Image (tube, rainbow, N blue to C red; front, top):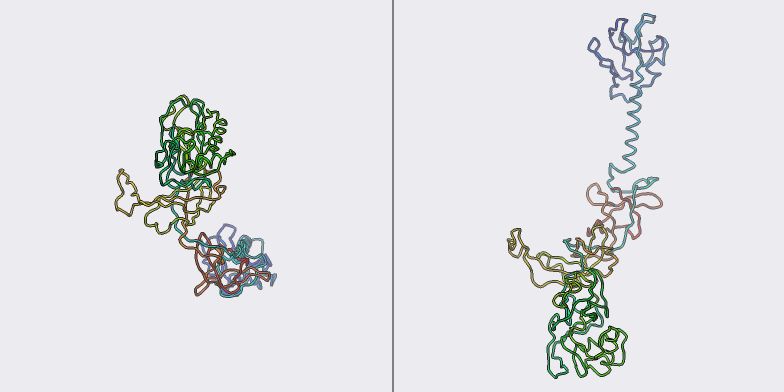
Length: 495
């Protein structure tokens, strides 16, 4: 057919004819064997020829007789076309080849453009870079902050160790660290003798002193309930036993003439509950006795003006009931309940090798199960190391290598702990801190060819690489410094 070059032909009986002629791209012959083993799959031009054929070139754009077209292929080297005629060969137009080549080229160009836009090929950060109209996909700001590097250990969030309340006791034993720190009105522990109404002397026992108990339990609090100053801890024979704040338990009967720390503890509480007519000191005066009668009236008790050991329970501050150990109707004796402080705290069994990281006041960060964090401080470090138990129940092998120290941390902002009452947490103890340094996310760093790092500074005029010196790495941030690196600078985060 005039104006078209034959790439291949078949005769009327389906036999293939030879293929020869100049290469379609003008750069040399196409090496294609003829004969029965030759298939019909399209051939891609030699890669040394950088031209993609179009339909006009392949179909004799330069001549209508099939002899002068750049894409003609005939029987001889002179490029003569095949003779026309109704019985001539049937020419097959290779449009799928052209389409595939164009799609391939378009895909390659688009892919290269996408890689360049995303920075997947990387940059050496050695100098300024042409501004991308859209800028980096993500950015961050150079911040001035404190970076802290430390050791992360396992901890437990809770209310601390529980202590027991004994019916008829003037106070409850409390674990180490409770003390009177939670109550500004708590009296200092008595270290000397206290004179009672009978003229004898006595030293305040630790925890509390249980007296002969009696009666029946008629009311108990619920587990999880918080009890504050003046509120009822339990009732026996319908008589309320309230909570008083302090450090010295009621270990003896107090009446007019008594002196000592326990008297001052009682008077501080009477004053805090709104009673007057006495001076807060270590002397139980007649005015104190009148105030006690008013207090006893409020409690529904007999107005004697005297206070016995079982009339109240003394603790360092408000308490949260951990577990109720008895039931209403039982005898008012023995262990009634256990309680803790109301503030949640974190406890850690710290491996002895990290002992040098902690002391009272050491800062720490507590990571909660939901990923939120709270700041904490070490408030108590145990003195004795305890070896971890082995699987068979004995001490772990290796001696001191398996020893741990009990460490307690407090969280000032309790709201940061959310609604967690008890949970496993990660505690990061601060080993090193750098204050007021410039920092960026680690992902903002770009490796420079030849060594070193840079950041992509995003400014009004475009994006440029600025070399940086690195300092401390901590919590996904890195300290940076260098020319043009200032607080508030916007930088790209390609990763």
